[in-house]
Image 1 (cartoon, rainbow, N blue to C red):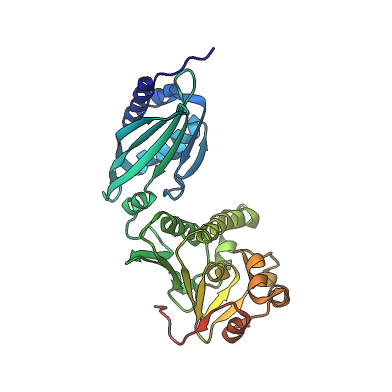
Image 2 (cartoon, rainbow, N blue to C red):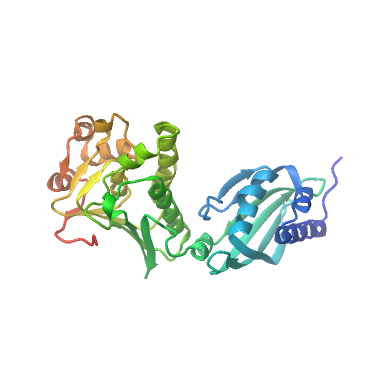
Length: 332
């Protein structure tokens, strides 16, 4: 026979959880959480904190302890609401600072918390202003391969490895996902511009990086790179803001993903597009095997992939890969 947990007992348990988190009291946290606990943190949080955390250990180590490592923050609940399904809804604000740069953090939150019959918490779903968390953590040099800013509603993603012609390494793949998450969580963004510093938009995967970081095998490295890279483009495909890509120089391999992600593409007259994968004996990534046949037709896409045939700016315009050829683009 189950006994219903009284509403006030739920509020008290949640308040005790917030106090235990502030004190870093692991024993108290473990006492309050049911062994079958599952937590969900808002997608878009920095440091890979977002997503589902199965079990008390995962929630504690991958979310709460990680917050404590990088932030000094307190939870300030403002309202508790008891829902008909037995869960407790908590509305409030996170307030504090990032530890390294002392940037202030103020982020609204909603916690939706479920309880077992013994009074312990079995689920917690967190919604919060992820852009505020990212902004507090951000500091000069944190983004190493991409310059990102939002001004007057325009989010600008500038690939910034000019000496490597913006070849994609693991850092750039991860940062592509990070800035995409910021865009998805920032309601002020009304449009997105993707461009690049240097002689090319992107020549694709960084071959020198692959060869220098092959200790565990290329397969593991490719998985580590393509997972966040593909997550970024999946997220870009679902945002409401229009995306414009400005292409110049070489656009090859995975670098074509920045073209496929766009609603409108401009290119300089000397721009060359090339899949490049057959030259390495690997399959395509960046969504190309889905996008390219639909943009330029299956026969042309097959030639681009199997024969590694380059596509000129004129051909790209005629075939529908780009919208317009322009004579000047920002690239420095």
